[in-house]
Image: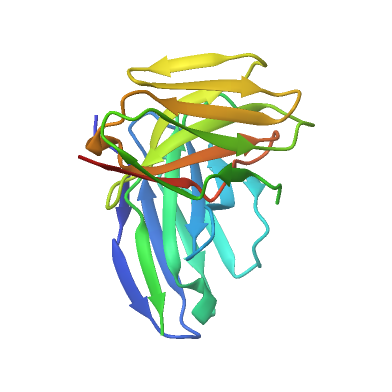
Length: 114
Length: 110
C-alpha cells in the first residue's frame, strides 16, 4: 500500500500570502490529522478530519483551516501568512478515529515564510 | 495544551549499550499513550500504542511500559545499534487530540 503523501514538499511564501497544503491518506484510511512543528517545539495538533467532518481543532488562530473530501484527501489552508508560520506541517492518517489508532505520518511540507 | 515531558532531551550511547527514556504525562483523563520513532529526513513511524495501566509492549529490541496512575511511560532499547539513532516521541491522548512531547534525540555511535 502506498503511504501518506503530502504536496508540495517545500514551499516559500511571503508574509500576507495564503497557502494550501494537500494530504492524501493511505487507501482506506478515513481519518486525517494535521500537525505543525516549529523549531524547539514538539508536534502541535492543528485539526482532525473524519468522514469530511472536522472532529477536533487545536489551539490555532482562525487563519488555519482545513477540509476533507469524500475520497478522504485533506487540504489545509493558512491565510495571511506570518513569519511564525514557518514550520514543518505533517499530516497523519488512520483507518478510524479514536485513541487506539496508530497515526501514519506523511513526509511533511516545509513552509518558509519570508 | 497538556504538558507532556520527555527526558533526557538527548542521549549519546555506544553501540551495544542499553538505554531508556522517560515520558511523563498528566495522570488524569488518560486514554492512550503513543510512542513514535522519527529518523532524520523520514516520517515519524509508530512504535507502540498503549492504553492499559501496566501495559508492556515489545518490538524486537525495543520495549515500553506504562504507568497511568503516576503518569509515566518508559521506552527501553536493548543493545543499541547505529540504526536506532533517531528522535523518539511520545504522545498522550486525553480523549480529543494527541499531545506530543518534544522528544528524546538518540545518537548511537559504533
